[in-house]
Image 1 (cartoon, rainbow, N blue to C red):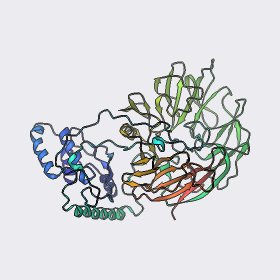
Image 2 (tube, rainbow, N blue to C red):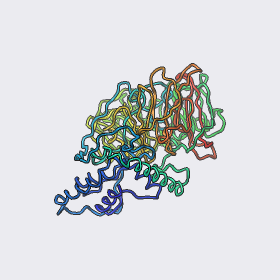
Image 3 (cartoon, rainbow, N blue to C red):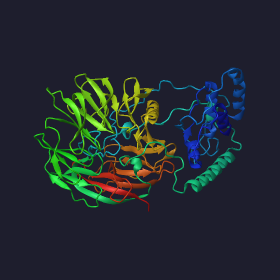
Length: 615
């Protein structure tokens, strides 16, 4: 491994990983080096094999020497690769190093392949294979959304608590949020002679333990060494914003409610209780509503305000403090969605096919107008996904300016803008504010926030089989996510965190889950309708957030739970009964995001807000 790192630096002038000691250790254990430009295939394949994370998968030094010797004539006369100031972007490793895993050469370990010192040429995947899909798969709600009842997709709406089977019959599944190593060597996978194997295993254990001690001394005992944050700011609506901890404290409980809707800035929430619509302030310590009244439908508006629409289609704006005012648009307008700064609607137009789209601020002032015939859409992460009926095109617009970023022809969606479809027109605007994408029959195209094309990924994708991300993805991370999904099986989910990924593999027959070789010690949960294990994302402390089970009317049944579990030890850090509902802004004078769960049936239930604590 060390020789491979040195050879990497000799080819391009920089080491494959840079950073502080804690970051370096995490990268060496969990990341595959990025390929420098200009390094010939044969040389790169050898370096990639030498730097595999599993010691027993690397070629023996004699084989390395033989191949380097054989390459001399091939490489002679080729220009040197460019000298780099910093390494290319690394990717999460398919087989990260596990401190506790016994060596394949350990006589106490299960038998492996016969010893061999031969190598097979690497094969670089150009067109990833399509994942295997299982019927009846369901996609997970967007970050910050609760699995409760009706709402507008992409605007903080909710979907009802359910026992729907996720991919693989239980959870969204796909392994490896990363690409395969540049080379695979059969000899590396084979165990060597058993003499000295136990000694090598204990030496690795000792080195690993010493390294962890160094990391803890440098980074502090609360550090999770294999994760290092770099990238976008994570706001309170993403699960990764939840603080580290090993316990929960219930802060708020809203009893016997239905049809909840979260505001655009997530400071308020509306729901139906005792036949009336109520608006509550989530930053307060009391559950007393700030407003209560009659509404046919409640939808998010600007900031913490809501729209209360009557059966006559007339709408009233309910402010975050409960003050009401007339909506700035006519009752013939079509509601599109809202952001923290703008509410977005389209006019009826001369015909029923819709009219111009307009954005209004909190004062009711029109901030922009987009000409065309629009009558439906979704708003999420600062993007508007809509359909322009005259040109018969799906469009992605900037919610801030109304500028059309991308247009693609497609079949007109239904009157509810295909509410049962996660990605109308193939467009995915759920990944974060810095990038969006579109899936077609041949692959996926990734766009930057300004609408410029960033990358394409070949493969077959289905909205029924997806990753689970607890943090926003930029264009580069989104490309990596699609690349891994194209190679994924239906039994695993790439669970993505701020700067790391683990694969959660679900066995629906046994109704168990594991990360690598480590089985997750999930608490008992109800399985009367089948196995339900749904990974949600990685938390800031490296624990995997998982929703398991289903609601049961019997008090003797364990029901459903939301669980935080360590991917390394398999131990549960904390758990709470209910279905995952997303995240909630901090309480007044507090700084940490909080957890929202729904406890009860799909008809009426309790909404519970809890803080993550350290016991």
